[in-house]
Length: 187
Length: 105
Image (cartoon, rainbow over all chains, first blue to last red):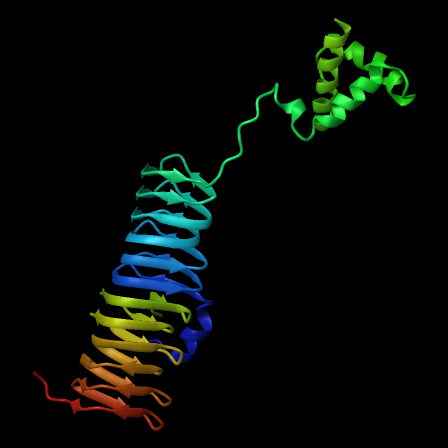
């Protein structure tokens, strides 16, 4: 039989509910919880809940992170993320800013990730925050008042005909924006 | 080594039942029913009726304890409640208030 001293040294603030344990009721805590058995009722943790493949949770769960490889029936509210792994099966609603559902997982319910940003289309981009810089520089380019910019005009026009962009992605994005605007003005 | 450990910051309000060893370092209220051993460590607080095979108590237990094999109260534990088991050990320093019944059924 385990002695008291050994046990308290080996657990690092992790709680494990073994395979043949059934907990029926409320579970609150400030540490990680791994469920390999059965929990029914309510779970409230400030850290991570891991439901392993043998775990069955029929409870409403409110945690920071949740990794589900077993069966969860109930709503899961997480302040950070919810992950359903390949063996995970869940019926219930997910409310979390990050949701990861891996191929092979089985899920039925609603997903609420909070407020989403409006999707950006290509035409909208120049109007959003990064855009004012390219718009301004392109206007400077066409009116050769700024010394640096006209030098870039011929350099930019040539690649405009040959679409292959310069190597750096942010430069390419800006160059693309510049090129598009310049082409329109030329025409 | 027990498979199930209830950590020190966990609070469970309800029933626990199972077929394996259980180590409690947190708080459990309600009812505990196991077929194996229950170990309540120094930080454990149990306000529940306990029914298991063996019990080893180092923490605080309030509730009736029924064991089919043995109940052991270690020093620094505090138990309030009745104990019913064929074998009972109470170590020096333990604090206990209740009835003890060692008759076998």
